[in-house]
Length: 136
Length: 405
Image 1: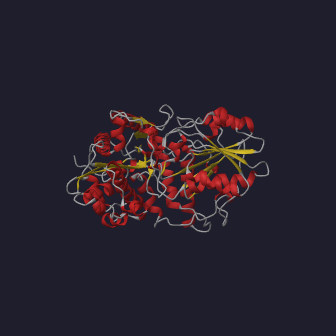
Image 2 (image 1 turned 90 degrees about the horizontal axis):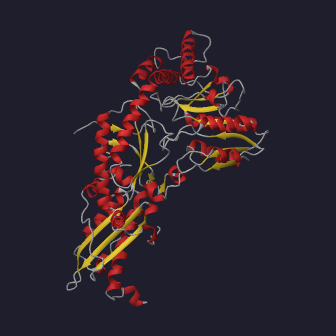
């Protein structure tokens, strides 16, 4: 299967690879997938307490090229967004940007899940209820 | 170092040897006749060429030329052997024993036969990929008509104990069919000596052309028959109708002749290169060789690089090096190799595996380059891998609640 140039570019030069201090209060960590499925993504956000903006994002991914590119792209998009804005990132935006074929759509879903998981962790740590939970 | 593309996927298909191509060429135009045309020289020439090739192919496996049935390839030969023998002998019983590590051409054919009333036992192999002869013998029942075991596995290169299986089959009066696709032409294969009654193999795995294969059908002690699965003009002793692929068969014959002559030297050279490749790659931490290393094809290595996903790893070098991964991440189901799973590997190690299959045209320079490129790729992927990081921190990965998806 041929990968798009964008996937190849992210794969060869992945952005924001690394690890943030998961113990820090302003860091949210998302870990999704499973080794036996062939995909594990860990995505972390660091939120500036004053501005409420995501000032840093890091990832590490075990998976195919599309999974790595999806998470690399996600970290790029997360930086500078508010947490609420970050929640609006849709997996189909990733599919479109990276021109993922249908068999690789699950990679983008995993990236979206990782973002949501990281935000959930951040909010739990800081006692922030999500809008949906607050409304319920 | 800029190199041409390196091909280490010879278990998928081999390049057609230029000596084979040269032999085939006249049979496309100059000698284009139908081997079944008995009434003119065009037909006679074609028939003569097919007869000669049949001798060459038979000679490779120490068989009589009358025991060679040409087919379109090993898949068709597998189908003919299993379906044809089942149809021919089902009055004697309906039970067939095979292995979980067989090629899909055998497994799926067996599933098809199940729907037609056959009882199939898919026997598990041991952790090293070998079948346990005691378990195999214990699986035989009064209604067993055939045991189907591949000679050498396509993914791991593991060679089954064919002699022992042949003895068991003889003792119990059961037919022995083997898919010999990966073995024939690479290591000595003498079906008669080992008590194999039917054997499928293919030209394009031994530096011949694609689209042609054969089924060996034992003619004496015992005389085995299979019911034709393709009906028509009654070619190939009535077992496989269809105009013969004369250029393909001529190429198959030449490939068989060369294989017989050069097999020993190829095997010796390639096992040296394979060992060098394995030694080089096993310098990396947490690297495991899959399959029994003492009973294995000389040119094959199957290696797992823990905490690295195979398809992703391949992307680090697949512009330059061609090989196969045990991770089938191209399907939505993300199924890892069923062969490696059958060896008892966890899904994670199966997803982390690569299959290297060297060939006649592989060079030491290519192997050296491959060791370097793959080591670099593994390190790149491990730098990216969260589970490698956790593993290095001493986290027990089995204790983590992974979110299945």
